[in-house]
Image (cartoon, rainbow, N blue to C red; front, side):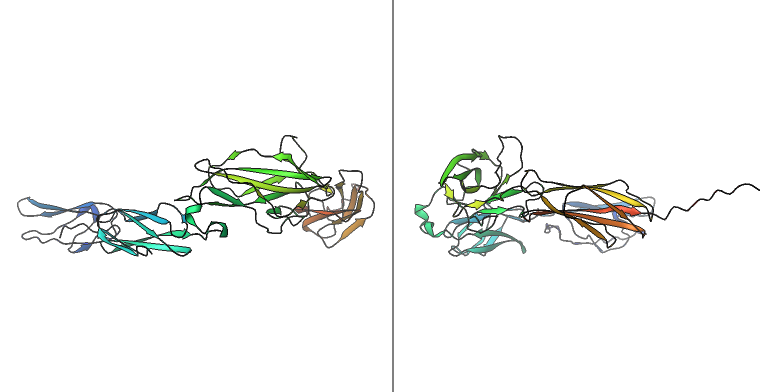
Length: 390
C-alpha cells in the first residue's frame, strides 16, 4: 500500500525475496522483514538490497508519502458576541470538517480551508478541524461588551477605561503605586483597559497619558503630557517616575494631588474619548531617607573591630533623621538617636554575615538596606611572640 500517511504517523515496510541469501535496508540497519518506520514527518524512501547468485543483486525501493502537518489558526484572538470568529487550516489530506461552532455549529467535509462561526455567549471557545482522522484545535475568546455597547450596530472604534481599583498612595482610580515606601526611586503606574468594537476588533496602536496637578482646587492638565505614543503591541500601563532629573521627563512632585486621564488609538488611527480616573491620587509629603552602607573590612579576623559607615540622607532639611539601627548579622545590633555616620562592632564568631541598616526620619518614614554576605569573618590571627636566640 503506497497511500500517504498522516504527519507523525508510522507504517510497516515489508519485502519478499527468493533465491537470495539475505536482504538489507542498509540506511536503517534492517536485515529482516517486516519493519516499523517509526514516526515520519516528511516523505522518505526505503531501498532494499538482496545479493543473489553469481554476484547479482536484486534491488527495490518504496517511497512513503507523508501528508503535511494539520494546522488551525484563528484570524483574531478575541471577538464579541454575534461577531464572526474566523479560522483557517492547512495541511492534512486537503479534506476538512469543522466542529465546535455556534452559528453555524459545524461544517462538513470539503476542501474549504476556512470556517466562520458566530457565538452568542462570551467565554473561551474551541473549534476542532479534522482531516483524515487527525484533529487540531484552536481557541478564541469571546469578550463581554461593556454595558454602553450592547448594540453592535452602534459600536465602532476604540474606547478606554480607567478602573477604580483603589491602588496607589491616594487610592486613585486607575493608579497604583509601584513602591509604597518611596525608598530608592519611587514611581506610580497608570493602568487602563482597551476595547475596540470593530469587526474584527482593531488592535491598539497608540496612547496618550495626561496628569493634572490640583493647585488651589483647580486641575492643570498641562502639568504632564506624554503626547501621542505609538506602540507595536497592546500596552495598558504607563509608569511615572518621581525621581529628580531631566525636567522634560514625566516627573511627579512630592506632596502633590493629581488625577490621570488616558485616550487610545486603534489600528485605523481612530482615537477614543478621554477616560478620566474616578479619583485623585496623592504622593508622599517629602522624600524618604536614602540609605547607604560600607565597611572598612570585608574579611575581618575574629575579635577585630570593623567600622561601618552608615549613611542616612534626608534630601530636605526638614524632616531630620531620627533613628538609625544597624543589625550586624551575628545577633547583635546597635541604634543611635542622632546621626553620627559610623558604627563599630567586634565579631567574636567566624562566618558570613548579612548586615542590615534601617533609617527612620523624625516623621516615621523608614528605609532599609540589607547587604547579603557583606562580612566574612575569618579565623583569628595567631599571636606571634618573638623569642631571643639561645
